[in-house]
Each structure stands twice: as structure tokens, then as C-alpha cells.
Image: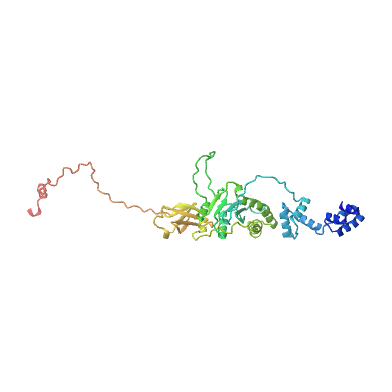
Length: 428
């Protein structure tokens, strides 16, 4: 020990100071303390004493009591420290909270395990260049209200979210969110989705029949696929969940943080859930998860004048016009207004647009027709045809009638009169 060497004069106090990295004055003080306490001089005087910056036991008990409530069930140390600070004014680090929760058996760290590694795809450089689109069917309200679905659109370049709770994963609800996105940001270059029936028409095969090795005919697009074509947006299908990993990992985050946030706020309805999304969760995503794009350029394109969203984002079908200028669509009959009847309309194919507001629009030749719904098909009054007078029968081709008749050889009229024996009135 350096102090013992200095005490027994084996080294000088200057040498001891250099070896200990302190001043000679401090060495002399330690030597005096060594005479009084012996080897305990090497132990720091504050050892075993509580730190002046230590959080009080009362604060720890309060935090543990709060985190033990059912509403905070399943919270991890990071999320718990955030809620303690924002909701209960207890500012502590997540590592401190981790120690409290482990001691109170409120949390246990899971074992780290090596999973299969997937090579990450490089982010797109511009916002709006690629948007990942998917729906999660998680129990978001944990049984406190109706079942809701979360549709999410995540920009690939920035990880910015645009999501909303809906009542069903249907074409109409997805089109509603698409319209919101288009009105707010414009038209992205491409959407990246899975191969769900909303985006890709399923190939129909007979039971116990495989299409392996067979040519797949080109199928018509779905309603959303047709709408994206009309808007000039490319649709890309992912071949695996890992391919669209950004939106999949986003759902994992939401199923942890968002579910617990909805629970703490006591959300029971879809309207309340969407309000929490807009005011609390999406701002947190923008401030925490979202990143700056590599390029400052925005790849979104504005909507043009010919992009009628009400018409494009509707369920489109075709029908033939009947001879009485009616159209039958989904067991309903619609009569075309007389003012819109034109040449070529009878028997023609028209475009039927079933709008999301429940109305039906009919378009022919680039123009919309006025229609009214009929309770029953209009009756056509059939006119009775007039009977024509019979035509005199003409002799057939093989008839011999009149073949020996010759006007030159026939007797004269006066000769016929003499033969009859009738005399004229003047000869009586």
C-alpha cells in the first residue's frame, strides 16, 4: 500500500502523491488519518451512506402502487416511465423504473434470442415514392366496445403514419381512407400491399384441382385496383409479410403502445379511438419513430381536374340498356330520362357507378344520364296490327291457265252479239 510505504519512509511523500495522483498536502492529511483509523483510511467516507440524490422511498412506493393498477397491466419500463412523467409527475429514468418493477415483480426481462435475420431493403429516398398499406384485426379495445380494425398507410421513406379505425376491412372503408390520404398529400407513385382479395382478384379453381403448370389468364382488377389505375398509381404486391416489414413492425408497436394508451384513456367507442389516434398517438409517432427522408423532394402528385374521386372511388360495373330504355342493376330497375335518350343508346353498354354515399350514377359516352328508380318495369302497350285485304291469287309457275288464249284469234264484239240473238233497241 502506498500510504504504508510513505509512513515507513520507503518512499517520499512526493513520490506517494505522484503514485496516487493527488497533492502532497492530501498525502499528509491521509497519513494523519492513517494514524487514527488504520487501513480504513482507504475506504471512502461516504461509503454505505445514502446518496443525497436518491429518490425517496415514498416516491418509489407511490410509483409501484400506480404501476400495480390493472390499467397499467403489461407496461414495460420505457412506457411506464413515460406515463409516470406525463400522467403522475414522477420524473424518473426508465432504468430506475426497471429496477422498481423487477423488485415488485411487475416486469421480468425476456431472454434475448437470435432470430432469423432478413436483409433489410433500403428505404426509398423521397416521401410519397412508396406507401405501405395494410389492415390489422387486433382486439384494439380489449372487449370494451365494438370490434374495430386499424387501416394504416406508412410512407417508406419517412415511416410517417396515416391510419384510422374502421368498423370493417371492406372496399368502402379502404376507399374512404384512400380519399383522405389523396386529399391531404396527393397521389403517391406506388402503394405496396399484400395479395388480399381487396387488391387482387382471386384465381378460381375447381375443388381438388391445382393450377400448377397451367397458364393463368389475366383477370380483371378489383375495385381498388381499378381505382388506382384511374389515378395513375402503381400497385405492388408483397410476396411475404417480411417484404412489407415496415408496416408489420408498425402494427407490433401499435398493439403494445396504442392498446395500452386506449386502455388508460378509457376509450370504448371507435370515435374516441380515432380522436386519440389524431391527438395523441400519431403525433408521438411523428416525433419518435418518423425520420427525415434522404431527399427533400416530394414525389406526391396533385389531383388533376379529371380525377373525380366520387366516381373513381366507387364500385363500378357495366349493364346493357333494354329496349324500353331501362337498366336493371342489383334487382333494381332504373328508367333513363327521355331528354337523355340518343342514337345508339338502346342495347348499348353503360357504366354503372355505385357511390359510397349509396347513390347510383350511369355514364354513357363520357356523359352522365339522368335516371329514376322504377318500382316495377314499365308496361309496353302492344298495338293490334290491322288486317290487310287479301291479295288476288296469282297463278303458279306451272299453271297452264290461258296458254291457248290469243286476242288476235278471238271473235269481235259485234260477232258475239249476233250469235247471242239479241237485237239492238232501235231494230225492234
